[in-house]
Amino acid sequence: MTVLVTGGAGYIGSHMVWELLDAGESVVVLDRLSTGFEWAVAPEAKLVVGDVADRDLVGQIIRDNKVDAIIHFAGSIVVPESVATRSAITRTIPARRAR
Image (tube, rainbow, N blue to C red; front, side, top):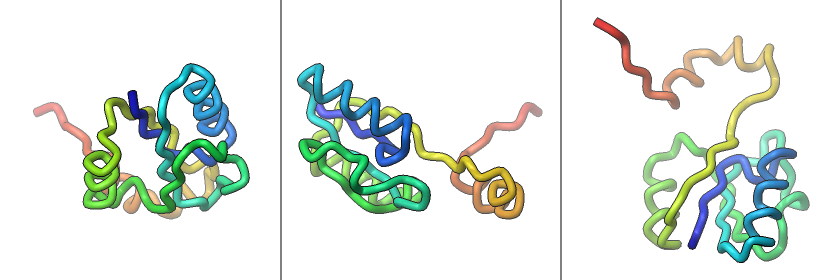
């Protein structure tokens, strides 16, 4: 099975990558490296540097790597940045509103 791990260069995501590899899975990491690190990604995993909000890129990764599952860890841990760029964050998270 091939698993796409978004945010896989961060602390929690990189540990998940190691666990998946230890379980025998193929892993593709998508991370923009804003707070994650290339060195944190296991060498056996494929690293794609990019933004999870880039729908075309995500689609290409899924198609090119025949992704079977996605585990999502991408997100901002910097509270002031999250508040200051709220409109950018909410554009990447589709929401349904009760009517």
